View 1: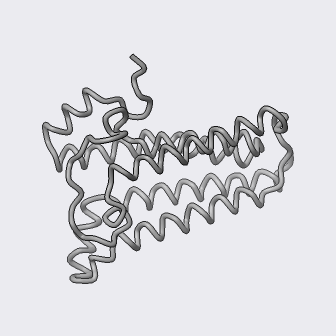
View 2: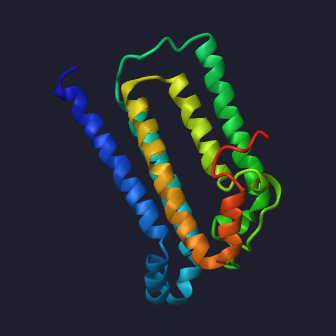
View 3: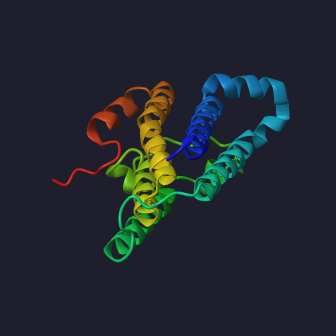
Length: 195
């Protein structure tokens, strides 16, 4: 593998770094406060813009990942293909079930009402079910297309998730105080307790 192969990989890693940096920066309370003062009444569309920008950025990176030509690292037919679809489908189901615990209109920014503290549904088992679903989808994606670019993308996602959880929980502790601290003690972040 020569330098013409590695340059797109380095750019892909940089793209994920920029994406996750902006994702965290735009979700930070200080950034939101800045835009609240700057945009005034237009701030009610901030969350919708954030979701749209995040979605477009993610799709761009996934298409970019797919455009980088690379050999498969493992045999990806047969059992691996079925496992990939199973992991991805289960990840989508986990994310879909997690939306039952959130108000979709608030999640995408169509409502400005603040999300109440809730531990209903899947949130009784894990604190971050959307991240759990993301991990399952990432594993499925890698099994489906086990190339160097996909491996790099999945590693970038898995490296960011603990950072994203830390930043999100810092905001939640500030917002909900001891209730969230106790919830954090009682409920695992990503993998439900089996017993």
